Image: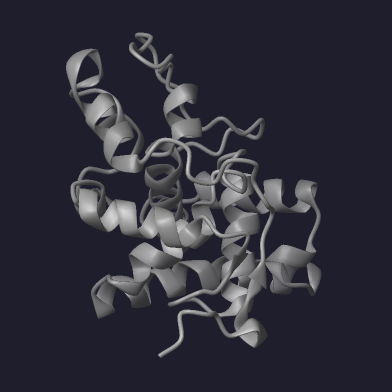
Length: 211
């Protein structure tokens, strides 16, 4: 089989100047070691969330990062619409996710996930698309930033037992795990190359979509 991607399935995503950056294995070893140990990722992502298993597997992370780095990315699990929805949703949740290649990186992780976790993610992603269609008659990627902010605010403040709150938390944990294990995310956590600051951010979006 040729390694050349099928251009009919290639999804244009925002290009980045240095897609490789620091390998996630190196980033995570720094993040979880020394002064960063015990307070960084666990404070941002639910400890039982499936993304934690991926973050503990250096070989999976390196392969996912390498495949996700290409500018014209060919998805392996999501379809074109789902990938674009994730890209826009991730950026709304954690600004900087687009340049950090969060959407293609997560597509790579989801491609090797269990069927149950794959279905759960697709259900959560679809819930945001449906919320946008029900409210504005357009898919999530087609509505404006203020409209996205409003829907995210509603989801993040909904009853903790509600389905939409669960969908919000599920996607947010995937996105946060991917972003804060990247070089950009680590620097936002306070990493300067050899040290961390003592405080961590919550949700960085002005709308405050924390949970």
